Length: 244
Image (cartoon, rainbow, N blue to C red):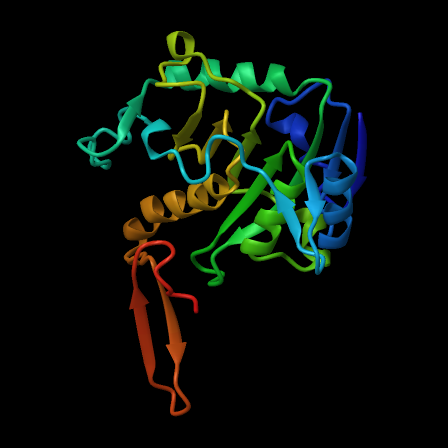
């Protein structure tokens, strides 16, 4: 297996169970991922240089296809009225099937931080089938210093394989699309959707579960600081203008 890039050689994808991969591209920079996505036919360049991609049938998150592993640890810590349970056995079958699906493929890996505060952030390793997905998540999460990558040990694994199609009868899901979250072991499996926002939201989900246990309240918001140090917090759903 060919491995290119900077990474912790003592903790590669084999530690998660991957085998038979054609190549793994570690922590590629934005210009390289930009070029790779075009070369692979994943994207096109618009007038002005912007990268244009198509997400297929899913132009937003598939909330109805998101599942959480239900076990003794999560039985009383998840609001099950509003979250779809997935048996641990079904999650393990899904994981193994996705590992088999990945054999022979080239994968892109980003080792990142979810959160800015060193005391509360998650080290999220995101394994993507598409170069543009790797570029997307690299831009949204926080990148470690180059010197930190050599001994980076992930707290969380996100496996993002858009070409994988789930089987409702086999995997206990609703459609061919699935976002399966094991919040205890911090593993998220994403298949059947090319919408890249599922990766980002998976990190938020992990933080929303773990931070309250540490006495930290996660908020879906943005903040501005005034000239005199006064702060304003802006709440709102996605697309309501919090950032702008």
